[in-house]
Length: 100
Image (cartoon, rainbow, N blue to C red):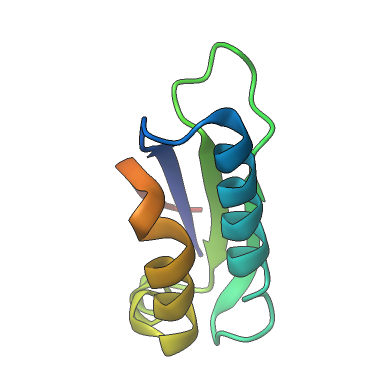
C-alpha cells in the first residue's frame, strides 16, 4: 500500500473567511472521491490545524499500490476537483508518498 500526503498553503491574497470556504471546498471535493476511484482505500483532508503548523490544509490518503496512486492522479474525477477546488487557491504544495 502507498500513503500519499500533501500539505497546501493557500495564497496570501485570501482572508480568513475566504480561506475557510476554500478549505471546505477542498475537503468536500477530495473526500467526495471516496469509493469512486479504483485503488483509493481512504482519503481525508485535515483543515483544523494547530498554531505551530506552516500549512493550511493536509491531505492524507491511502492507495492499494503506487500504480493506483498514478491512476488517481490522472482520473477525471480527481482532475476536476484539483482544477476547480485546489490549484487556483494554492501558493505552495508539498507532497510525500511512501509505502506502508
